[in-house]
Length: 283
Image 1: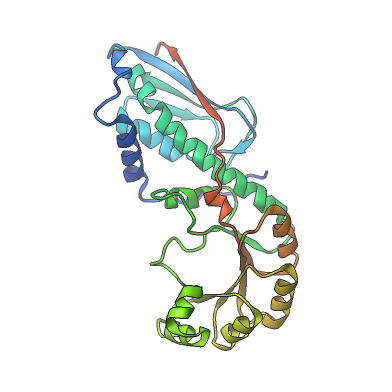
Image 2: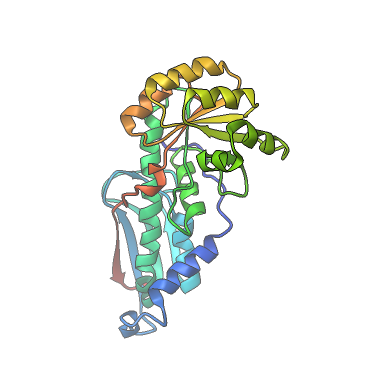
């Protein structure tokens, strides 16, 4: 896996997301950490147990900022960096009770977002020889969309729309509700926004191109159908492919010359990266 060149801009909701996560874990207070003397200080280090791309440091930092501002976190790698097994990614120092209370919440963010960044990096590497872009989708964990989309960027992928509010994407149910591809496109063109429409066959593709769609999403097209769509399109619209795409299909689809491929698995089929925090007494 190759590291992305730049760390993306941070989402604005990190504070509120971390606050909710801490509340669900701490509730009315950490009963076990309450056994530790208030004056006790400690040190800790976080170790990555496998090859991965690091992601989630700002959420990790925010956990301890909200718990106790006396906790200091020193990072040895930045988000997007490649990690090796048994590598120390950060060290911490501060009140022992705070280090213990924040451990699980902080690691949860790190393991989830590093998992998303890592699988994205693996997919991106498979098509790095092509001009095709890898996109995420809205198939994210509830409440963590901005965090997971940040992780996709850390892995070298690109973001599709953030939500229903920032881009038009006409899907099959919208087409049915409007009556036809052409009717849906006619309504969308009045908004003067970039318009994307999902099509399920060649007939709908031709209607979408005739209706002036800016982007056409080829949903569950076979490889041969995608090749045919690229020929029919002839550069008129941007073509996006979606629908149950695995790693093998990804490479073959990129070879057709489509502009982008969207993969829901980047954010919905998450395997957490294995991190451990080891705490030792003393400041």
